[in-house]
Length: 82
Image 1 (cartoon, helix red, strand yellow):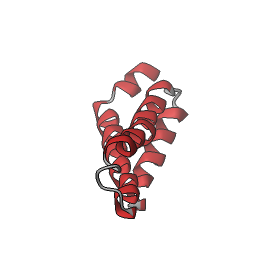
Image 2: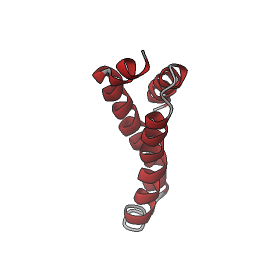
Image 3: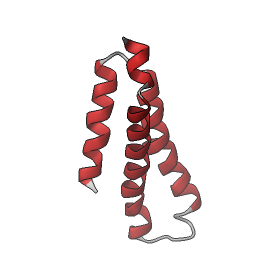
């Protein structure tokens, strides 16, 4: 799943480089922090194996990368910072 992390790093660096810092921070917090906490609270007690814990990284990266790609393609970050 590490190749997915490159989308997150490149896109968040792009947004921050043009001065858009708030939305990338929120997307990252929701996708990699809040989602993982919710996963640990609700999924791990039912599926308490090492796979149940480790798979959340890949899932959270896919969700976060997807959110960043959608935000990038909409282009509102360009108009806001020009």
